[in-house]
Image 1 (cartoon, rainbow, N blue to C red):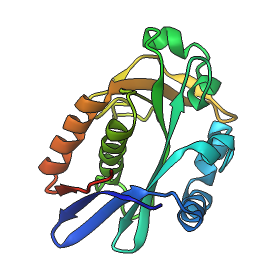
Image 2: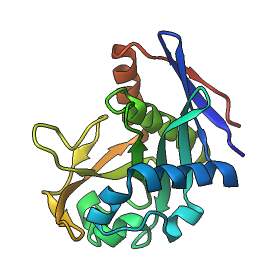
Image 3: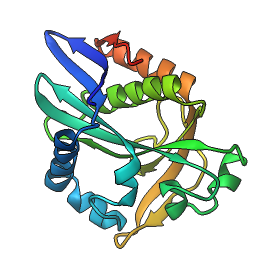
Image 4: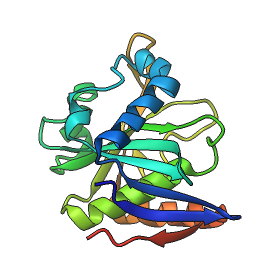
Length: 202
């Protein structure tokens, strides 16, 4: 089901982040990737939709009825998962901490970038997983861009930039924990004027 996780409201605009658990919602995620993210994924050397997508938890952010962003979350176990494909040494980098959640394929449509869509999706993803899994560690990769910190929302970069894909795009692995990430994203949303209403998801 496409369960709503939280609403984010500012100046009469409401965004809802919900699970993309039905075929139409997942088709919308794929459509956005095809339309807005294909070139980035090609540079990174990954496909628009892969085997991990079939078992991942997908989140969809909608503004009214218009999709404006999506995020994929997978559970990685020792040596197994999407993060290990890019970072086989993940256990060593993370201090052999066991299972972790991988946040990936984050996408925001043009015209909504820079307006905290990513913040809302990260916040909602952490809320949902905190209530549905004992795993508390979050890991993600971030493209290194001049003048921008690759680690945000209370996460920490644990690698130097690593070139990935045909374009040798520099990325770093970052890690954090659910509760600090929830607190960090909440503060950022509130500073930007967004009020948060958490939906019951049990």
